[in-house]
Image (cartoon, rainbow, N blue to C red; front, side):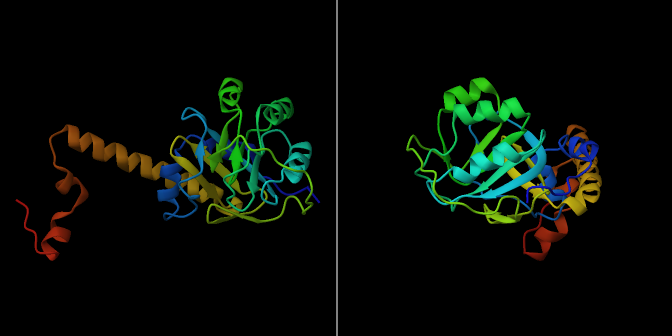
Length: 219
């Protein structure tokens, strides 16, 4: 079964206006994948519903099934046991993703052909870079909840990745997280304006009572 409910595209697009860090903070510091999962190029950015798949370490059979079954705009999310010594995805499969309109790939294993991936522009976020090849042996159910980077990701949850890392948002919480992210950006713009107006970080952040309670008086 690879059919599942996806969020409204307009909401996905709106979430993509905010950084992964902003979203993580706005939803109560939840949803951040482990910091080892980073883009192969810092300019890469993605936001889309997760098409989840579980692969055996050093095996990309089910990744290829996921690419064949995903829809335009989906982000392939691969759980492969945080196995660093495998290049499970490269320029050939990236071209397959681009031909289908897939929005990107997030994986907790390795990728290769990174120079070509940068040229192609498909957003690819991985645990490692490795030239070592893979086998095609192990079958598992696609589009089921997977554990990746310390977070449970379900099919249809929204994955947002940028230069800083990757965060996942529960599909049913999407509208609330968008609103919270918007409010956080407004608040941060106010902090910056206050700094430029000459106020101190301690004043703007209201840290004087916190410091005083710890025995540090600040004028």
